Length: 255
Image 1 (cartoon, rainbow, N blue to C red):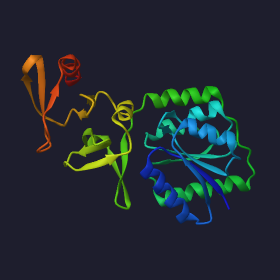
Image 2 (spheres, rainbow, N blue to C red):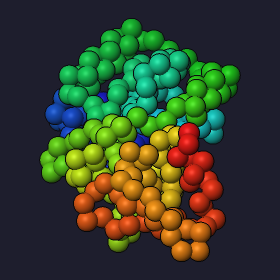
Image 3 (tube, rainbow, N blue to C red):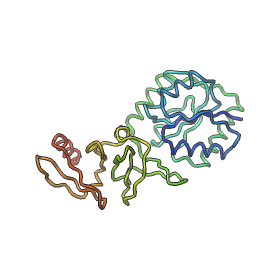
């Protein structure tokens, strides 16, 4: 039976994928779950290639396409992503399919069937060209994350960025708050989230908060040329905009 490698930096998404794979066929051996480009490169250098790789496009330390620049990946890949479809469609070489997160079981099943058909045809996996990788990496750098996948009990929930009022950190964990004022833990740091989101929609106000332009209820002048922001979420603390961020914040409000 197949030997599968999972490369995914969102823990809830990785666990969900593992469960779906075993639901499809409990005999499948999941060799490892890896969350970064560097660890993936090291794994391929030290281990025999699996039969199939499920690979998230955006990993903890960069785009997964960087793996191909550093090590040979002599096996088919199914890409998983929370990005828009057209950017993924540009990357066809070495990939038999792509799945949009959160992954549905019927989509995973179809991807395995496609993989099985490829194996039967004994198709040789084509090499990845630098030109193609650079093209797709450039496309993806112009894309922003469109949804965040979070775990709710035994379920996965996909939250569009349009429904997120703000992100915040508390007790070494990161959370997001939705438009209906529900909060969920996110498997990224605020620094990492800052790299994924559209700066026209969100602003990093301080070390603790990233605000959406729809999250603000009121802005008032505060002492020493600072600003005080009151959020729409009831009982949420007011946020002070420091003097050195006031100009950038006002410019962001005017976008």
